[in-house]
Structure formats: C-alpha cells, structure tokens
Image (cartoon, rainbow, N blue to C red; front, side, top):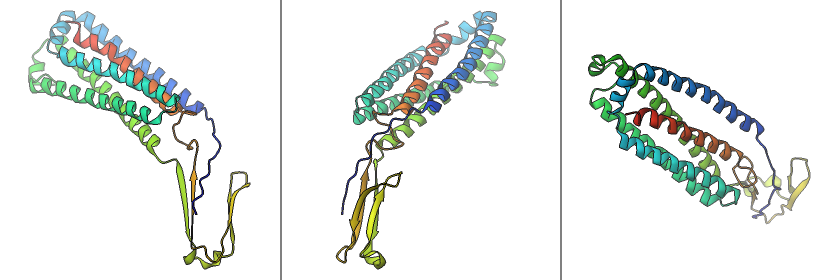
Length: 258
C-alpha cells in the first residue's frame, strides 16, 4: 500500500534568525571598524614603511581574489532569485558555484601566505625582526586581518554547505509495518491523524494484508528551504554579501597603497 499525502503549506517568518543575523553583522561592523582604524593610525604614522612593505604583497593574487568574491556575490544573489521562483535545482547550482568560489579564494590566499612565509616574511621571523617598526606592524596587521577574513569565508562556506544539504534532503517520510510479524494487528484499522487529532487516512487490515507502507510527501517540506520560506538562505546571503564587502576594503588597504 503506497498512499501519498500532501500537507498544507505553512509560512514561517523566522524573526529570531533575521534579528540575529543583523545583530551579528552589527557586532562584526564594530570589530572590523576598530581594525581598520588601527590600520589607518599606524599607516599615517609609518606611511613610508607601509608603502614599501605593501610592494611585497602579490597584487595579481589579490586582484584575482577580488574578482572571485565579486562573482560569488553575484551567484549568491542568483541562488536567492532562483529559490523565489521555486527553481530549487537552479538555486543549488548557483549555491554550488558560490561554495566553489569560496574555496578558490581560500586556496589562492593559502598560496599567497605560503609564498610570504617561504621568503621569511612572517611574524617573529629573523628577516622581519631586523626591519623597521612600520614594516613589522604592517605584516602583523596583514596576517591578523587576512587570517580573520579567511575564517569568515570558511564559516560562510560551511553555512552554505549545510543549507545545500538541507535543500537536497527528500521531503517525505515512510512508515513500514510487517503485519506477518505482528499478527495481533490483523483485522484492525489503522489511521493517520494530523496535529489536531483529525483522521487524515484510514485503512482496514484484513487477513490478506501482509505489509503496510505509508509514504507521506510534504509540500513544502517542514524545516526545509523552499519558495514559500527561504529565510535561512536569505540570512546566509546577507552574511556572504557582508563578507564580500569587507574584502573591498581589505584589498586597497593592503594591495593598492603602494
């Protein structure tokens, strides 16, 4: 026996999530503002040293990463447009592109860091200890801010992966009874009730019934992302756009001041 059943659509606002992501971004704004002010203060004090140190940072890699993040912002926006149009497959495709671009950014950032470390340009290195105070401060701030930013990108990727897994889940539930192993149920009536106790589906179990399979299809699936309720994806998109915007300040501060 295979009986599909569609539950009514439910619209959920997730106000807590909306408020939470905005509070989080506000706190983030305060943290990053403090870091950029600290950078500006030291740059004004050691302008010549900062300019010279910036020449060792690979402008090409920073430019590529800027292009990658701008493209990821576009694909993230397109994923939300797709889910609003109830096109879940296209939404997952754009979400996958966003995740891939995030990993590409981290890989390029890794190679940039690795090249600097191979040259001995890292905190407390012998090369750095004999440099001017401004150069030491530049590299300290560079590793702190770009490292913190990389963690933000990684957190965004993990969030998008979790949302993608949520969307790919099968929005159904199956219940299976083997009547041959439970003869006491023969001759009984089974019923499926909603949350208010109303009968949705009933069936008689006669002597010929061997197995019962009840498959319930949810439309839309509860606790999943769909066109009627995509607030979690919207919050993730807001976070990703915020992270991308931070890079638009990091890029000129470290790569273009030369």
